Image (cartoon, rainbow, N blue to C red; front, top):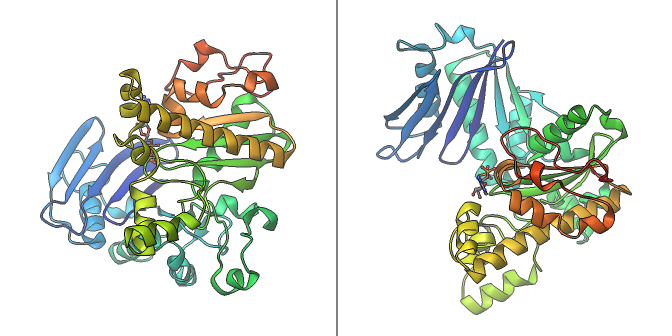
Length: 376
Ligand code: ADP
């Protein structure tokens, strides 16, 4: 079966065409600067050939049309016709409380995604545009919505409720939803498989540490708590997001800087975190280089990131009444041996030990704990 996977962002559209039998990726690409026709381009790989075309992409429909054309036209196109695409999978960021699993898309589903759009306007809007564009280009093609929030729908109310007046929850559905669910689900299942143990028997903490970052507690295969909230701003210190802070900071900064709450939120989303504290970059590699050169603020940002991860690990460990497995994934989690080591500093006293040699490796699934470690 050939599946086209579409991830529509506000100004981008990423995709892969996957043959599910062989698990081969037949095409992978990115349409960028969608909506800015003068600067938009389509970059893609088919086989070992990489191409970058400057093409005007005024909207998501144009991006989808361009992608589909690439898949069937030209000498090394992977398909002869769009009929060879069996289904389309759409990444949708916010599914609200409606979706606890991936769902076949129909008008009712689109309506619900539209209803929860208010909770994630920057994300769900493009998601709907991506769905509509595919419907227009391939009428009747089965399409599935895959939600970032779905895996976290098993959280109990005591974990997802905010201690604000209950009426605000009833009126506006203000609660924790959590994000990165597809990643937390995948790595928790993969870790159980890797260790050859049934996931039902495991208490797992998954650390998705990328530019955006979150931690989840997964007990018996079900998410019991996670660090992102109503929006992805909560939880860990991230590349440009502040993570958990006292909400009073918002009004304090608004009043003292003479700016609106929206402008403060923009600062907290885009100019804070590792970038804001270091004043250098949100890229962890740049921070590691600056630290090597003795930059104190880079070191502070790095330590704050590690410490925030450590705090959430401890939180979910306590909530689950133990931890059998700790998983690191995403750009920083997979690649930075020194960040993993810093997060785990002090854990030896709790019986958790990493093997420095195994920890220094990357690029494949690997057990980085010592054989006598109490947590894998
Ligand atoms: P997102 O999907 O949220 O944009 P990624 O999961 O792609 O983020 O992770 C991006 C982060 O991973 C960046 O901060 C980048 O610096 C970091 N990263 C990638 N490779 C390395 C590496 N070798 N060492 C340290 N950090 C790395």
